Length: 89
Image 1 (cartoon, rainbow, N blue to C red):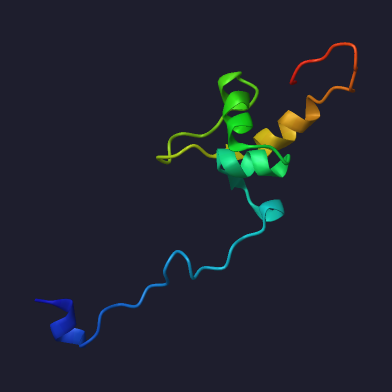
Image 2 (image 1 turned 90 degrees about the vertical axis):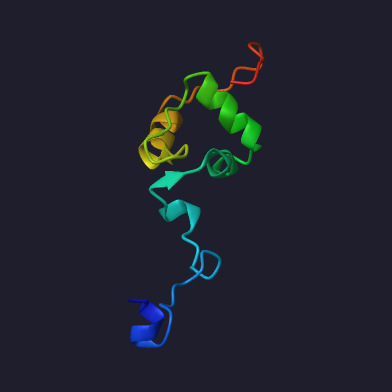
């Protein structure tokens, strides 16, 4: 039996665009682009951190998600700036 025939209407669902966005500071996971945006960098920078093994995304959910704990670990490994070393680290 058809749902519309029984109830007369289709179920109303909220579209993805209509949902209220969660601020980045309150998220428990980030896309690579969002991870890079936290640091004011480009998405390419985020991918480079992943390929260098500096962050470990979760891949079991069908997409790459960077947990907030990984962001905190990334920040914990920070180093003091030394202008004599150079490089993008």
